[in-house]
Image 1 (tube, rainbow, N blue to C red):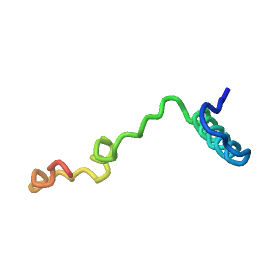
Image 2: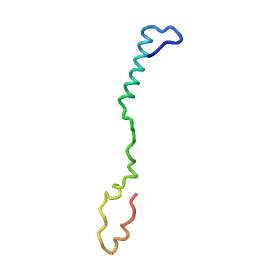
Image 3: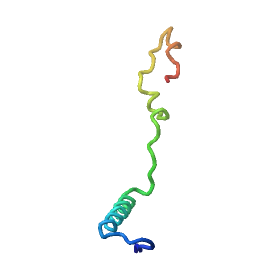
Length: 68
């Protein structure tokens, strides 16, 4: 329940205030409770395996660095 404690709002002002309160309540009710962000791309282990592994050979050791 909403009660006007001070002042004398016009019907238009009261309707505008109630519309804002209802919109905020609807947005809060529609939002998921556990809003967790997805992990950052830099911490994704799959980014390490995006490139092909080096082929064996005499210079393969030079291509085995950690990308990033």
